[in-house]
Image (cartoon, rainbow, N blue to C red; front, side, top):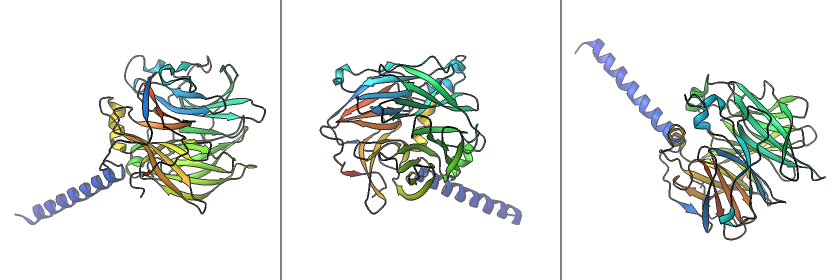
Length: 377
């Protein structure tokens, strides 16, 4: 064997070893080696058929109404001739109804005409006036946040569109007034450039922007795929999930200026998505414990993706404790993106499935689940 051939074989062997190590590392942090065993702390769940992609849920706890944002992401991303015409909608569900009477009723406004809603947020003023803010992906590289006035009869009236270069790849929104909001950017630029490498290396390149009603500015950055965003009940904190970082970031909020200062991080070991802040201040978070499996599910509904609802309760001295309220391999509902609470009910939404899951918790949802979140012990 020649010296040159030996060198080539050694180099090839090293490449194989490095590639194998990289593959194992990547699959590990994506959760692909995590065992998924069904776990549920409540009594029963009812699958409520509706429309594809009920990805985010905001609950008006004073009235017991769930607002659901949905659009058919698979069809919109396909080569189907009708893909460009896909229009999503906003739906409501009366959570005061018995399980057999639950259904999703459309309240989709006429405007904007190109409407593919993503994250949503409900704001209620001291005077009872309600505003619904919605992340919208009209098509191409265009992304906006739409503001709607919400009437007592649940009629949505479009009031305002916010578009800004700093709102480049919006995922979720958290309203803090009838005009101001925080919004997460899940990538550092519009379009597909750089997304694959960012995902492979879990790059901390994404951000949170704040719109004060007139101008927009970046108030937090260095996040590994910023996803869900929510504000504490007293308005003094902002919570942001990192899907690739698999952790929750906690920020102190200057209510007067909107500025954020990071105060804590809570590692939860699962691909976090949208956040619901319960009445008692606990954070209920939809999650994807196996991110590569989730990507397979995105391309083929036959490939089920696990659903995971994590509950985080903050410690008095800082940090927080994560526990699991719901975990399933995806047979009941695949790829859970949000878990929102109302009284004894937990409402779970999904990125692609044409349904939501309404679970009876068998008591107050403020009771702490006993099972730790995967890898968070």
